[in-house]
Length: 385
Image (cartoon, rainbow, N blue to C red; front, side, top):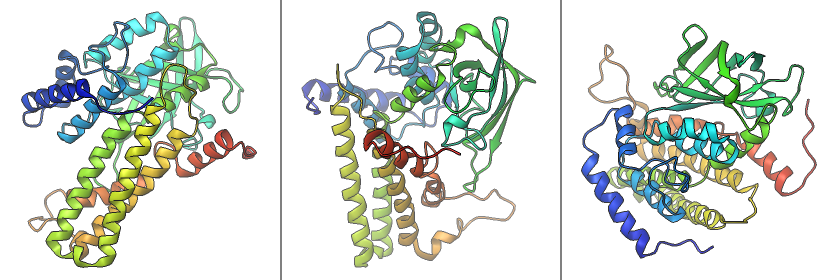
């Protein structure tokens, strides 16, 4: 498939820009913004014509939407996990009843989701999860702890990878359950305060939380297959939108380098050019990967891992460059800060500190290299302890 933007796609781009220009006013509340996107049909563009989402769009037009959304600096999406992770997973592995129950509320922006994968001691090594789900009549009772759970404090539902076969090990005996978050006394969410001062991630404790039997996706014991399928959706069209945000950050650093005179340093200039060239390379790699998708196309097992390795370390270097360009002032807060006020980072300081985690979350670099080694290069599997 040749990936390019035609006349119809550019007309779609104009429609997207016009809508965002009209509707993106001020700083809308996150929940209401999701509902507004849903009302006008901008959620679920890639779900196909099954009747579960809103309007349908080609893969190229999905890229257009994602890029223009990022370019407009619209709010971070609260519904990202439901739209881009849960929905493709249900379309691929869910029952008709599950699709009919869960996809329309996501498309309307009414129900938000979070992902219950990582645990203490089982982060990148997902097969080591210990959260258990015990069958109790028409329900499962879920007990365990998840960590680094994005948006758990806002979510209505959580898809949870849990062990439903007692005594099972590694990727055997796991199931993919859909768990309602509104269970006081059975589910507790604790925000994790990071060194940036923000709390995007959470710990989630399940103490006998209920999940209905009919809300097991793909069948009991098939959780590993479903979970791996979901990870393949995680780095699709959204990667290109992410790169638009990266380009905006690089632009701010370039402006700062010119303003401070740091751009006169040949070493800094070389780093700026290198960051720009590598970002362009990542874009063409992402377009090439998307261009290989299509009916009957074989999945590229290494593509998501290659993309994660590329952008994770690139983004860390960008944060380091931001501090180099800022010089000594990068180490202090705003000039009008007082000890009685909350300490706040500016955008470039936040970029530097938050990007320290880029090579860990979403699958650490070590895990990505292992996937490439074993699944693409066919090297011997790493011994498991």
